[in-house]
Amino acid sequence: MPITLPALPYAENALEPHISARTISFHYGKHHQAYVTNLNKLIAGTDMDAMSLEQIIHASAGDSSKLGIFNNAAQVWNHTFYWHSMQPGGGGKPDATLLKKIEEDFGSFELFSEQFKNAGATQFGSGWAWLVADKSGKLAIRKTPNAELPLTAGETPLLTMDVWEHAYYLDYQNARPTYMDTFLAKLANWSFAAENLKAVGKKKAA
Ligand code: MN
Image 1 (cartoon, rainbow, N blue to C red):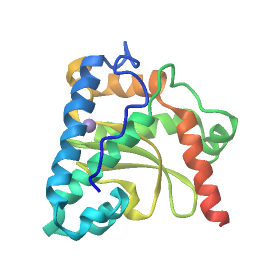
Image 2: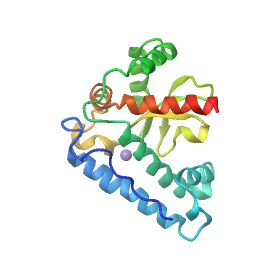
Image 3: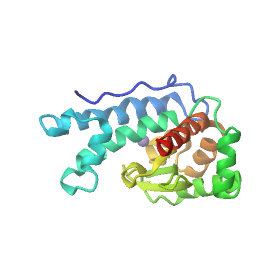
């Protein structure tokens, strides 16, 4: 069963004027597709070609002989999660339940925003900024280099922001902070984050 490129949850121009159709067409159509294509080449004929994407990530994480597989598998997962972390007309504050949880765990929504953007700004080179639920269920900010992701530490991602240059360079050039401000103000899909948080509650209750 080859790994397939999941459909974008909106049209390529749906995030304009904040992220252009040109950026999405390269980022989704070329970069995300390339991770899928490379992964399928790397797992063909191995015991991983019967695994789900998440199984491949866990089976290759931390194994230097499987770094290429891990990088491509994790980037397939990260990008699918990133597309869903944004929506047309998104940004601003989440609904009451998630907002209350953010205020409890970070002190205020403004402190959360600062920490999230700081994670993106201080991720040297390529990587990701994340809002996660840690193992105790508390919300936390993480940054990861390259393809790495919080799943391998047993944490649950709620929202992610791609800070690889290919995510913003065509629209913002080197102005990563402006891209990050725009992500939070205009794009963040808080209902997706709230759904992911609900799933954490269900797992804990099960
Ligand atoms: Mn990317």
